Image (cartoon, rainbow, N blue to C red):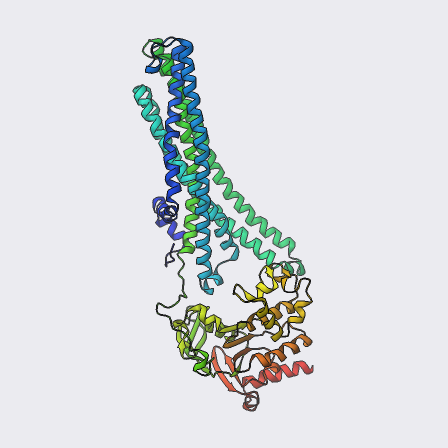
Length: 607
């Protein structure tokens, strides 16, 4: 699927029919057209074998009662031979149904799982391509529900739904044809009973669809609440929020159970309706057929056939209703997944990308903001008409009160967000004219809290790039973190748990420095990068940074102003605008915002 702007999932639900939703899945089915064709071909012998069995049993009863038979094979045959022939044919149809059902069931599940995997892969690729703005407004638990529960339900549309519905419809059609060929009056009675039944099924399925959509919305809320509590378990326990959060979770859980109960009710209503109608159909055939048998206008063997036909006719209808339930759940998933797949990929690579000039062309790492405006929400600007230039190799610190826009500058430079107005240039090229991979390869960012993935130490430094172990070790040596790594139980092969929970905050930050150093970026961004380090470790890192920052542009965001006194230049932001610019001594002499912030910090340290 390709992402394109559209309405929210709730809006699309009122706009699109089930057929339109099903058509969204057709491209995935085409990828596995051969397997789907094989499963479709197998449906024909299955349906024929199912329709022939009642006739064979009816012929056996007719033979036992010495009634006229319609099979040429039974003409001029004695009772024992005729029974043996019919038993052999019946055994053959049973063997065909069992073997073909096993093969077809396996292939259908295989196709369903492959399609499920394709949809999950595409959804994951699309989600990871979305801009940071999308994740600001979307709960993580909701995304997890889309990628797991909803995708599984969507896969069932193929594995147990669509193919199964074709199978059941084909069985109904073949049985109906066989009935009309055998006795059209009883056949008409049974077929006419299907009309009101189908109406009831469609009504209950519609009600099921509405309840299922609400149930999945509540499941998303449940998962979001669960994820939030697990991630913030430290705060939950420190502030004794266990009881309060448990009550909140129970309320959401109860709402979810209430909606699930509604889906169960409507699903059960379909099943019970079909059970009753099935019994009524058999009773009707017995009553009408019995009258005709007593009048000698119908044979007992033929009546037996139609009793079995009535069962065989409503069995696929019952299965059809169950599969409709799976499909309705799948369509609900399609609606919800489509809402994400239609989210526009705001930040795309240019159609005609440019490349940054090579190292031999001269100094590198110039950063220029030209009249940049930026807002996370419409008209609520974080940055206002911001312009400044950082020369290649210059060490520039950005300071300002909380909310002044310091971190927003870094996000815009790395193109995690797009500017609302204005442009950002790196070495004279607009960042929007560069492929994202190239731009981010030349900008090394070290945040206040380093994020680690589950895996070993060396993979967390390489992050999927093809660096050799010697290169990883060299980067660790360069940043004075090799000693810490070698002290781990398995050194560079030490396995880290999710988010690196078996390391301290300072140790995780050390790996972040090695991660940045190995990429040899033109521009190094330090966003409160040493805040989590103890004094001794910070001294080692500062010593390593002295060497790393040689001939490299550095942008340093720091709240501790004492750590940026040696910066070439300090940019002071206030309410998204550049308020002051100059060296540490120059800004102190100006007696402006920076001087006030510095005096406050020094006073706090003195106290």
